[in-house]
Image: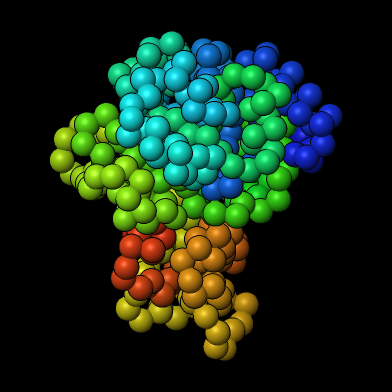
Length: 312
Ligand code: TXA
Ligand code: MG
């Protein structure tokens, strides 16, 4: 299969994308967080194609992208808490796990009673959702276990030959995946993103808990073990080993093995995955990363660094 890359802001690209989705085929598209690998969430065939292209285990449920809270209501039971979060953060990088109405193929939710919903903010994602008119299931557009793509070129690196169309919407503004919040029981953050927990609690008007990786069943498989990992081993903190590629904050001396990332959390998140990819392409054994500060603004970044550094 050839992979075509088309501008996401061209109406002709959208026509092509909708044709593919209607047929139960795949379209990779930009969101503000990372690029997604999309299919018609109502199409068994389309959803199956996502799992095949990614090499993703079918025990790992997908995020369904919707154009509005109204569209979410036809897929899930939207609680008052969900309305509050949508009011505060949609469209944007927040995914809510809600009680499913059971109208989508069970593969989308890995056979479970809940469904993860997100309304993205990227104009090309919004235009695609509007033009298509239905929900789009889309995990990050990488091979399972790889780094999420933050540009159209990264999608081609990950999935070239496995997806017929990539909509190019430029580099992602957020750069790490959305915050995933389970609203079925007590509000629980399953995966931190760039929105601090305190802001989520304020919008919910109640405290939020943290999903534990060890306790209970696999509620959010994205929280399990090594994920978002490059080929080199990743070491956070301590002394940089000789010959390592280095990712660090702020200024100072730099050479071809040193990647400098902005010294504030949103800039760091925006550039992290592309820096990891470039460092990995050097063929080094180790990528050493400077630890990031304490404090909730860095929670999402800290989570991704921890996962990237977990050994298989
Ligand atoms: O920013 C994002 O969220 C990107 C863009 C493309 O929207 N998507 C993304 O999808 O990161 P994915 O599939 O790579 O991660 C989805 C996360 C996983 O941790 C998955 O296990 C969790 O959401 N998830 C999906 N459905 C769930 C459910 N019903 N209950 C709990 N967790 C769920
Ligand atoms: Mg992913």
